[in-house]
Length: 314
Image 1 (tube, rainbow, N blue to C red):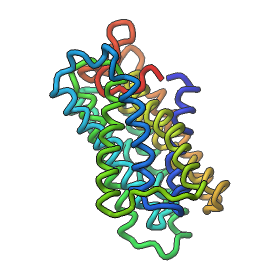
Image 2 (image 1 turned 90 degrees about the horizontal axis):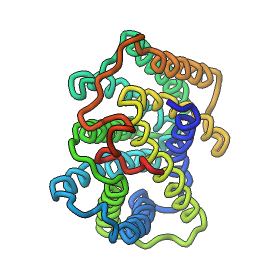
Image 3 (image 1 turned 90 degrees about the vertical axis):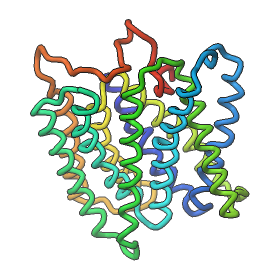
């Protein structure tokens, strides 16, 4: 995997936790998410409606993309923003999401027939250890946060894992702009419905709110979300999810710089352990053996991007 591509993905994905923190004090989570996706969805649909990429796309494929978008965007993001709004720090939220690689790695074999070497399993275990180190260090400094608030990001992690494997089993190739537009439109509908039902659809006038919206659209949606599916296509589930181990320590450092969140020796140790885990997994493929790819994934020279890969061209 290209190092710069991986680094950009880590920074952009981590920016979502920071953006949630930026907007947490200015509006409810559903309001921020509504105004993040509503203009974006309208713009994407208007820009792509007349293109040939929509022609001949079966309704069942669109419905599948609606479900993937509901899981990978709506479900995941709502839990992240909700947890941060309840007082869970941005670093801790990212840390709880850090168990995702272990879940995805364990399921990659039976569901997608992807080979996972013993060294890669060791790296996955090491990554979990790093996440635990940083989690305990960060959570020890938290005060006034309900214990059940820490379960909310875990639900979001499961939602993203489910979307990843649903995409991995897709058999239909469509232009990447179609899934991206469908995913954003799905989120726009869901979050607008929730905001209207809660009576909080009107956006606040504070500049911080619109700064957070712009931050999330540019860095998190086009950057983090798009690069996630791009790296998934190029490198497979195990490797793309191993990069998730880096989100926790990177977000912890970022949160400490921007918001004064706790960052100490144990957090630094966890960062080093997570980095070691990523290196171990990425070098863990045995010589002469290649992982069996998921059903829709073919090499760049063999086929266009599979369905559910909304940002292969970003």
